[in-house]
Length: 172
Picture: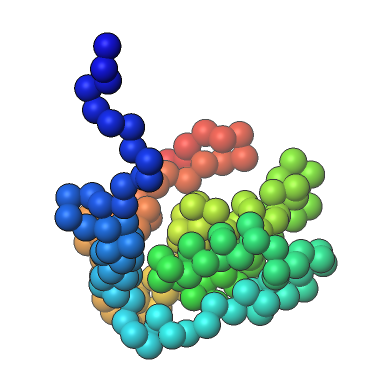
């Protein structure tokens, strides 16, 4: 029996009238358009300060991570492309160091792979003990200026939570 079709001697480079090269070009354009929507041209041209971020990390934690590591660079680049900047990296490094340093179970997570992961934004926005003290100062100032919070505002700020005594039970 005869085969129904002739075997190809050379692979086809045509796809619905477009060459593979044209398709790749179109895909690149789509990606570039998406990127342009996310960041202004000034931000796009801004170099990612890999070395400065890792040098800061190493100075705070007394470590020797390399800013040239492919994995570290890819994590920093991913966060940078999400719109985070140098100060954000420093804040996350400081917050997590303050929280985890001295805790034997957590210290091992003080590394670029963990801090610069997809949980970065959560780490950045996490309230620390110092942040709570700052909120208290702001509230005190607010009240000293003669302004009064409604019950709803107090609830939103978490000021209506019952206090607990040293045994963990609520005080009245």
